[in-house]
Structure formats: structure tokens, C-alpha cells
Length: 140
Image 1 (tube, rainbow, N blue to C red):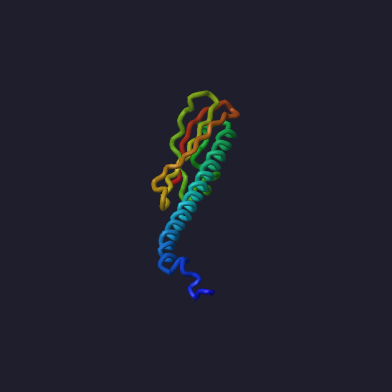
Image 2: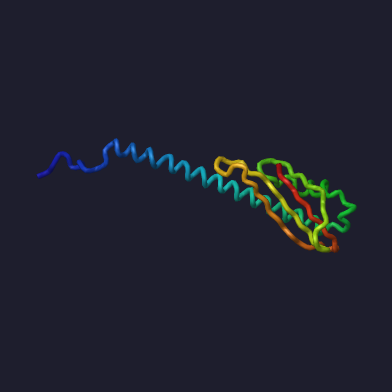
């Protein structure tokens, strides 16, 4: 004999709404967190690219003392900074070893979940012209 209430044990509208109240905010949190993490990874990639380009410029300079490094570096790598920030370099210092080129690039990420997260990357190479330099750039 067939029963008119064949779905008696299935979810009712109340259970469905309660489940959606749990699932939808959790899903929104996970998606927002993934987007913010992806943004941090993109910014980290740009910092690595800036460090690589900066070290290439510094490696190829024949006389680091005579060159106007801020102008040279800003012309080559300034437009790579994340989120339209501008790149500024510190006063160059001597690296610990002759022929060593140390480049450090920093950026502060302010996203919805990773707030005030300082991202930095370092690169160490050697000069073709036996010069040493240590420089820090900041995208701000």
C-alpha cells in the first residue's frame, strides 16, 4: 500500500535553512581566504622579480660608486611594485664580501585576513666587476 507521505524522513525546510546558515558563511570565508592568499602569492612573485631585476642591474654596473643608483633602478623596476606602490631604495651599503651583491625588497600587505603582513625577499649574487653592495628597497 502506498503512503501519501513518502518523504516523511527527508529534510524539511527548517533543516535546509539551518544547513545553509552554516555552509554559506563557511564557504564565503574559505573563498575570501583563498583570494587573499592568492594575492599574497602574486605580491611575493613581484618582489622576487624586483629583486632579480635589481641584482641584474647592479651586477652589470661597472662603477657602483659613480652611478646614480636610485634613478637607474627606478627606471628599470619601479613599475613592478604591487598595487601601484612606488619603490624606494635605501642608501647603498658595503656588502660583507668583495664582489657580493645583496638585494632586499620589502612590502607590507594589508588584506582582509593577512593584515600588516610584511613580505620580503632577499637575493645574493656576485658582481662581474668585483664590487660589493648591499641595498634595500621598499614598495610603499
